[in-house]
Length: 456
Image (cartoon, rainbow, N blue to C red; front, side, top):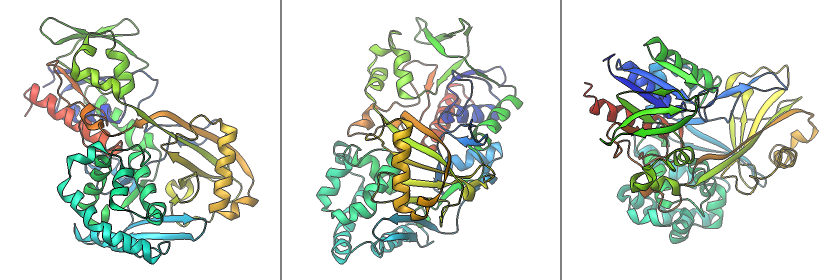
């Protein structure tokens, strides 16, 4: 199959996945990335002040991430994933302090149903909240089993109102869970998208155990993938923005022109770009006249904001990551516990906010003060710590925003252009914007290309 050539544009996780699978199948791959490094949102860099390798944003994963785990196995980095024995999440509440949510490790769906029972036992719920959960459980299960399409037209907030979820239930878990899994507010995200998260969880043991990576994201996802592609005769070229897609009269791509004014040809092409850059690329190309492509222009994005903090002392964390309730800051990652981060430059933590609309325009100083304020509420011992250093994480277009009606905007991997295929978490995966969605889209693109090139 070395005579078959595939060009991939986009060196994020979706593009790297497609490249790895194609290279594994013996296809000659040439992957282009506009930035000087690959990885998309899963990249790492050197923090200028501490000199330490820091991820652009920490990630967690679950045992449900079937395609991610297979990808890591192929490139030889699955050893960098750690899963606890049981599904467990540690939350901190300013009024009640820390508490655990644990689900029993039973076969699906019994473990997940047991998780609902375990949730009902949380100490931050009163008897009215527990009664409300009991009444809502049948509607939750009905949505998970039947997956009604009408939920694609309403928000999670409207769905919760229909089920009459109490303010206590929402504050104690459900609103946080929506934001953490979809990177969007309950008032904005499609109820159908959130139900896919629940369906995904209920299909596995114990809701899917939450794990984390024990080293930096480059070492887990990026460098080994590039080495895998190149070891099989492929090329990965960075610093090469795509300028033009040239389509011939037979409705096929004839070549791609890059900003360097170089043109490259292949049998098949995969565009693995986020929706906004993809939309910018097709404007003026003629492709925007096709409804299949033009709908991408309507996809919205959601921001993520965080800050890395180095202290002179360690926080009294009980888990490598903790969920925060009742404060603007929603989550904390302890890098010393996650990846044995060196402490000679201080004890490093990342705190952040998903769907960060309220703080998206804050500067570093203002957001850092907010983070320290909220951290002092959740971890009072930090009030006496010395802040040694900090660095901000801000991505205005971190993920797609799955508002009601979003699903009809998603594109399939196969396009009206016979030799053009798409990859990206925003394509037709039915999943929210996650590592699993990105990898799954890359696998689907590989499968579509394999069918087109008659690879067996």
